[in-house]
Image (cartoon, rainbow, N blue to C red; front, side, top):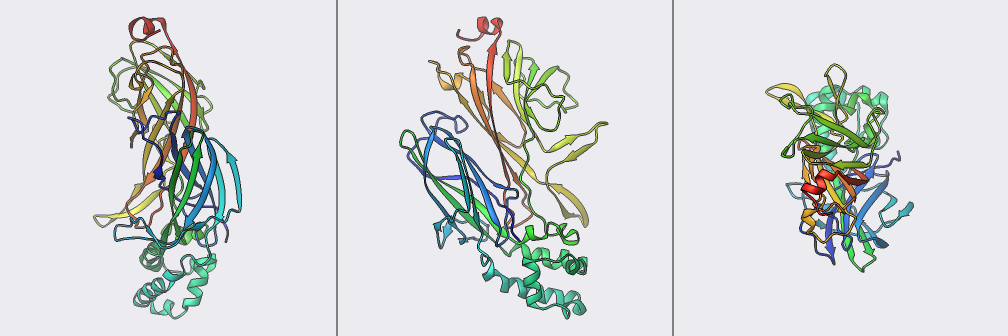
Length: 404
């Protein structure tokens, strides 16, 4: 079974750079990693082919000096470790360079990546199945189970009782997993060398996505989606937080989109008119859909947990990391120009307009990652979006607030 994959935590390991005063602010003299997105899932089974897109910003990338991978990360009891026993050059199956902004490569997870974990899995599963259903245990052998992990058959897995799928196989498979690291070393125009690391998870779960009887217990983690980014222009110059779904909000606002893949009625505009008496908020897809009539749907992954003895559906959390760049020159301090608040679980973040009306052009990057704490080896999904926009200033704003 061959697919495309994986998960991510993008970390700067070593670089000849100093970070800016604000982590979220991109400056053109510094090379910055933004995201590494593995698709279509943030996880892989042995033998899967991985496609990873790495995104950069700041000082333009002119070369990729190395691509390395480790399939042997050693986890501690908290599931976090920086220790790995081997590291090797990536055997690239396919690649494309869109420098200076991104690269995309594909490589394969070794077929034997989890072989050393199969024996503990069989020992755990065999004794548990024997205690729950001796008759069923007599029908299967270790060889059958191993084959069904790599090449699952719907008929076989449909014959497995729920008590075994939910109570034995899913918990045992949760620990039949490993983390891996993907390393990329990039060099930018001004000589900066940046080595970054993306984390992925290897487990069998994606092999079961088309097996309905067990996919509810042995789930894959889907990447978040960014279907739209827009701006709210809210009446009042002292509005510090905003949510259009807040029933207590009594003010007025306008909304337009930089892009929107799910609502063709949203006005598309990359120009923001800055005026006195308003507050501005960037917003993005929250994964929660408000349907006609007020009901809600979600694109987030959901999980069933036992809460006080009853099954309860729990949604994964989304976290939003905004980055921004002022593209025009100004003599004012950078904190007096276009500023976005950087991070949080809220998909809406405040934008502070520049105090210099000559600062008209900006870029914004958004990285969204998901989190769920109910699984030990749960991979982290990621999504990436980039937009450019223009600020226009009314005469009233120029006269009362900004340099002209």
